[in-house]
Length: 506
Image 1 (tube, rainbow, N blue to C red):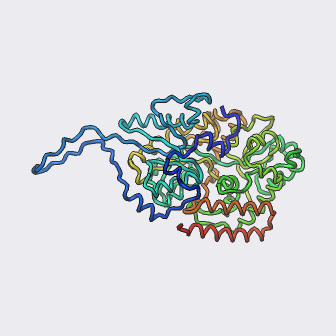
Image 2: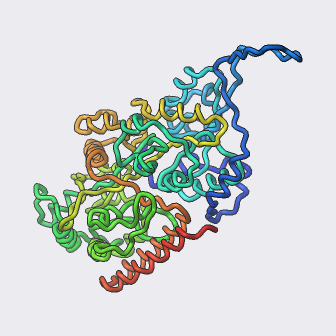
Image 3: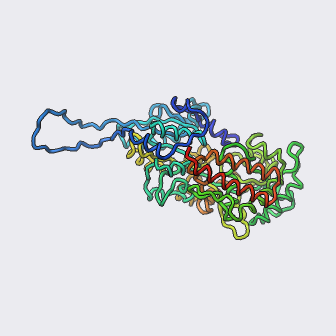
């Protein structure tokens, strides 16, 4: 049972993320960008074993030399699966949903999901075995994938979140069936789509919503039957709550989101929906930057108003103090963008909480960011490319696998449309321990299905550097309480910087 919210940092630790390849572990920690031409040259010499399923007979006119008799048994195939945890004994060790179980301790919930996904498929493909290893997450996973491609150590399948589209654009993934992709919410597949073709399927997903602590909402004299639908409504409500919500440690607080800093895209996942709503996305799905378009500066001004209804001390504590879910329960945070992970422990405190779609600006449109969207993709030049495509097409849409994480550990929701469409009554949410949490999660399911969900921009190169520049700018805009004119200058500079990083080949 998960008794506290799982942060992105906890997620990496809890999942047992570690570098399992000696070659990759020896690599320097800086971001490595591999030119497309280099990848093609490196991967083109890889020998691709062919898994034979039948003997092809050939008729010849004469036999000059004796040849070995053909075998009736297909050569065994060992698939190299990059995944979220090392699973060394998939077919021999039993996994139990018990924190004291030794297999659980090593593999976390990924061990149970692996057996639900892979064992039936292996039974249908006798002679095939798997080597399942993890290669970290976020920028570290990106680096490891680039190094693998450059060195020719290419797996059959891999996984990822915000950097998937970069590899799609590099042309190293194989396509999966459009019919299979159509089974999933459009927002969950956009990041692995290019020119109408799909290069992966999501094993899990998530969507941002606006969490509201209704206890504090009412304490500020606000009507809980009239929740905000516009940006102006939201700003006024946050300012009203901030006036009455005070603690000795945190001062006056209301709105919360992760403070800026570092090279992670995690902060962007919590706030870029505001820009998408205002027709001012940071960039396209394929990484064409638009950081300084009309509407972007106004959105930053609006977001600063929200941010300063809480103290800098609260914003800077980020994922500490037991997580923002606990602070929401404790009444420190009243309003926050959150995804289904943030609902894991919501409701444990004495609060009345809910989640709603994000309020809209004038002439705006509904939008959210897919988050926790874990895509599995087959590699073109892996050892078993045909098997890799079949593996993903056959087991990612498995309804039991799609529901497994939500029904056991919480954190994620399914990406299958057939399950999202049941959001009002979907009962496989036992990983979320309270009715409040489950109701919030059902809201995120509906938003993923219908709420203008989209990925982060798919930068084709230097993604970590771009997110570092974005975080640095975010910090200046917020801490300096910059004017709209000053913000526009920041955005003009950011636009040029992103264009430079995208054009840079080294």
